[in-house]
Image (cartoon, rainbow, N blue to C red):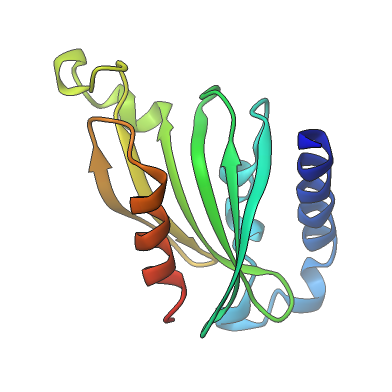
Length: 150
C-alpha cells in the first residue's frame, strides 16, 4: 500500500511539473513544487498518506515519511492544495545542510537536529528547531494553524 501512495504522490508531482507553463504566472497560486521539488521529493524515503483535512484555506494533505535518509530527510509534509497545484508546504525534517552547521554537542540524542519550515513558490522560511524528534500531533497542530488560515 505504501508504494501506491508514493507512486501517486510522484505522479501528482510530475503532473504538476509538466503543467507548469499553464499556471506559472499565477502569482500567489504558483506551485511550491516548481521551485522546491528537489527538496520536497521523497527520494529514497518511503512515504504514506495519513490524512486529508478541509480547512478555510483549502485541502491539506498530510504525509508521513519512513526512516530518515538522504540530504533532505523528512518526517512529515503538510501540503496545501490550491486551485491548480500544491501552493504551500510545511515540512518537518532533518536536512543534512542544517545539521552540518552544528557541532555534534548541539545536536540531539539521535545525533540530529530537527526543524520545521514553510515553503511557498517564492521562498522558504525556518519556523522552529528541535533537539529531539518532534511529536506528530504537535507538528500537525502547528502546520494546520499555518496552512489552514492563509
